[in-house]
Each structure stands twice: as C-alpha cells, then as structure tokens.
Amino acid sequence: MIKDKVDGLNNLIKKALEEETFPGVNYCLITDKDEIYGCFGKKANYPEVEENDIETLYDMASCSKVISTTTSIMMLLEQGKLRLYDSVKKYIPRFRYEKITIWDLLTHSSGLPADIIRASRLQSREEALDKIFDALLIYETNTKIVYSDLGFILLGLIVEKISGMGLDEFAEKNIFIPLEMTSTGYNPQDVQRCAPTEERKDAVYNGILRGKVHDEKAYILGGVAGHAGLFSCVKDISHFIKMILNDGVYKGKQILSKATIDLLFTPQVAMKNGVSLDDDTRGLGWIVRGTVCSAGDLASPQTILHTGFTGTNIFIDRINRVGFSMLSNRVHPTRENVKIIPFRGMLGNYIIANFGGRNNGN
Image (cartoon, rainbow, N blue to C red; front, side, top):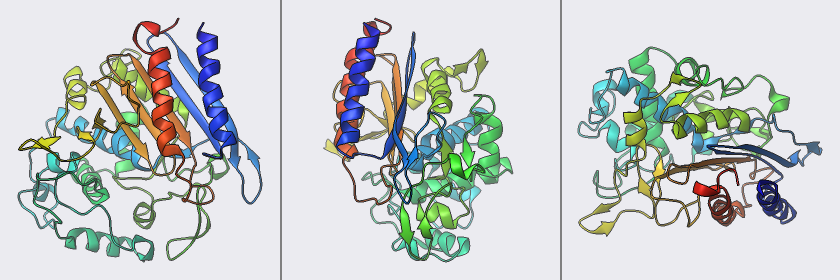
C-alpha cells in the first residue's frame, strides 16, 4: 500500500519534470512512521548536463528565514535574551523607528518595504545596509502585511548583536550541530555538490551562480543574511522536520521547548477590523495555513510552511502528522520559469491525502 502511494507521488514529480517545472528535484517526506526520500532529474542542464543525487545541496533562499533566522530568534527568547515586543532600536540603535518591534519584523507587518530597489546594482555591504537603514515605511505599522526581506535582514543583525556571533556561527552551534544537519550552512565549500542556479550578468555577478547565494542582497552582504543564504540537502531538512513534529525534541535532545513550538503554530496576524491583511496568515516567521496555501487545500489549520524563490519549500502539518520539503533549482538557468507555484499545492494535496493522519504507514 505504501509503495503504491510513494509511486503516485513520484509519478507526479516525474510529470512535472517532463513539463520542465524544474531541472531536478529532491524531497523528504516525514511521518510518525515513515521517512521517504526522492531524487529526480538533473543537477544542472547548462552549460553541461549533470546528474542529480540525493546529497545535492540547494540554495534554500527564503526558507533560510524560518530554518535559521526564526529558530535563532526563538532560541534567544528561550535564553531570556530578548522579548518579542522589544524595540528593534534597542538592539540596533541605527534603526530609525523606535516603535517597530521584533514581533513586527517576524510577522512582516512592520511597514518596511519588501525589497531594496535595484538590488542588483548594489556595490558593497555598506551600501546595502545604508539603504536598509534609510528605508522609509510604505504603510503604517500593523495595518498591512507586506513580505519584507529587509525585516529579516534586521532580525539576522539582532541575532548577531545579542549573541556576539555571526548568524552563520550561531545557527551552526545551536541548530545545525545539535540536529546533525552536517551539510547545512552558509557559503558552502563544496561548490560541485551545489545545484547551480541562475546565469547572471549584472553588478552582482557575471556567470552561473553555483555555491554562491542567488539573492542579490545576501550576496553583497557576504552570503550570510537573515533573509537568505542557507544551503542544505533533504536529509538535513528531514532532521529539522522531525524536531518540529516531535515538539522540539530530536533524538532525545530538547532543541526548542514545546511552548516555543506551540507558539510557532499560532497565527499572529491575519485580520484588522475584519479586513484580511493578506492571503497568508502570518505566524512568527512562518506562514500558518492561510487562504492561499503552498501546502495545498487539505493542509490543517495547524500547518506551518514557507517557500524559497530558487524553488524550495517546506511544510509541517501538526494535525495530519506529516512534514515535507521539496528542494529544486527552478531558477536554473533563468528565473522566468514559475510552473512550480501551482505544482506545490497540488503535490501538497496528494501528500496529505495519502500520508497524513491515519494514512501514516498504510
């Protein structure tokens, strides 16, 4: 029975490959009873074809926000080193807005713009930071949700300020090593193991990006930033999923408290005065099952999820007891291919219907 369900899942992915949704894709599917992994397609199509394998490292893009940055912030909270409603300015005096809090940044409701205009023209880390600190609010705080890379760059800086460590160092010590995510990190050394992403010809980079972060801002910030920069493989991501599904415990070690896990699954902002602020319901860092859900229509209200621009995604459904991550390099060699967007939800429906809840292990 389980073999038939896995075959059905794999056939959906093979069909997506035939439709050129992505060059290649790896996945992990975790339930209370099963660990299932898949590897398909090519690691690279250009300039030379390279076969994919299960150990391929993918640029996690914005999934970095939840796996690394949000988790780091929550760990500092557990250590008594910050409060969610602390002012950002308390930790970053250069930040101009005294009333914007860590909570506002985590929920994308701060009022900061989504991005730096013409980020591909940035020349230095200093210029990027200047633009972030000079950014004007585009709406009143807490009146709208606008997904903001700038907010998460600031969160990364807060982690560094409080911990006295680089974000990469803090995450490695407190998240990746305890979770045995031995291949996960920033600025990977084994470039050939990495799936290439986009071919670029701009001020940021000239050539095919491989082992270097795709996001322009993270690149100019040195490859380590709160919004992007992480590289990982599906086996490592499976360890993270297991920890979340097991109320913060991995192999007998309490990585995050159950209270923190409960909070991550709690919707934080969705409506104001009866008006929807966004199609997504925002939690702390994570999306909590909203109207438009990349985990599909069958995901329970206790589902947290996130996607990455390069072609990555992760969702964890606490009620249906299933977690899934699909890693691809859909931006190789160009970002124009967006077929993955509808495919994610269709695949999520199949996964929850066939592997969720009482279907686990059957």
